[in-house]
Amino acid sequence: MNHLKIQKSPVELDLKDFSLKGEPITYQHRVLKDVSSIFLDQDAIKKMPTETLVYHVQSWLPVDEGTRGGLSFGTSTILPGKVGNEYFMTKGHFHSLSDRAEFYWGVQGDGMLILMDRDRNTWAEEVYPGSLHYIGGEIAHRLANTGSEDLVVGACWPSDAGHDYQEIATNGFSARLLEVDNNPVLIDYEK
Ligand code: M6P
Ligand code: ZN
Image 1 (cartoon, rainbow, N blue to C red):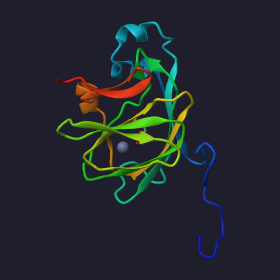
Image 2 (image 1 turned 135 degrees about the vertical axis):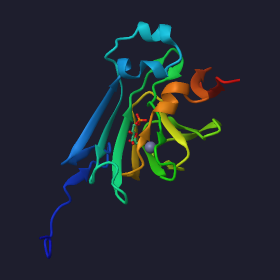
Image 3 (image 1 turned 90 degrees about the vertical axis):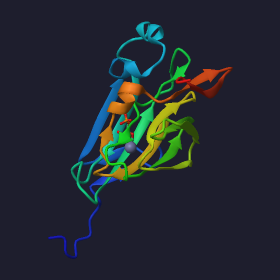
């Protein structure tokens, strides 16, 4: 019984790097060999160590994934780096339930939130400490680190949103974020 109890939440957030401490936290690490297929320059990949860390995610899932009405909380950290001239990035996904939205917000570093609708129109929002991003339920989302330090981004999404990776794994995003003359540029790869 919690009646009249005063206690700490089971999870704390470090406000400097947004890391989570407490129970139960899940960790995901994505090294180059896990995500190699998302990058354009497959020759460049072959020259890089396969265990190179691309990004890692800490999540607090207070209720099981799939629970209606619940919320999940995460911190994504994308390392600085490129494959050829394409920035290190997350796999990216649509939500399985397309009426489930998500918030992202920038904590540290510089990057881009790459967004794509179901008609495969792709655009991006700049991510920086304090940037706040509403991602509609129909919109695929992927983070890329365009800077020289870790890109740290907080996220909060409905527990039953689900991750649909299939469409992105099969067809990718319609545009890629490449470095051109030292600047990030979205380039259409479908036309
Ligand atoms: C954020 C949230 C998570 C997601 C993670 C990594 O923390 O959107 O739901 O899993 O980023 O992104 P991805 O699943 O696309 O690799
Ligand atoms: Zn999502």
